[in-house]
Image (cartoon, rainbow, N blue to C red; front, top):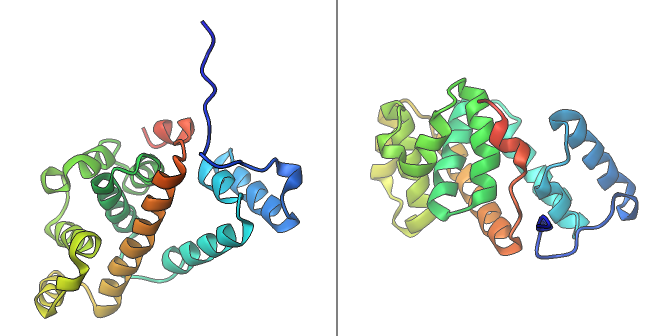
Length: 191
């Protein structure tokens, strides 16, 4: 029986030597960091300008000082990605959550039902707010801010929760639209 070919994306994925030099450097950097070039990079390289913008905004959200820990960030992304049914983002950010938290079970708990996960009340209200940003952003009000502030989040932290959630909701939708296949390597990380 022949093995099925595993497509990375619904759209053509350029060969490495067809990519602009700076996108080749992005791929090389990803390979150095992860040991492989993640399928998200390969899929988005179909449109190099959009890949560049995606990576720049991701860096702006995740590579700055924040009241959110790396585990908090990954937990927020994993929870709403599970809610949105984005297999790619659950696999990739679930791996990052396992590594950031040191807990090999946490990402599965958060992706399936964060309300039953082994998380703090502060983390739960952050994810509650992320779900509101995901599903009902027009109803965000001052009570949401009061609840988050009562759990020690600053206004800048609240912006960070909303920014991560909005950006990764876009990412969820693009990964689903493109049918980007999760990298097998992500399932093994942090276990």
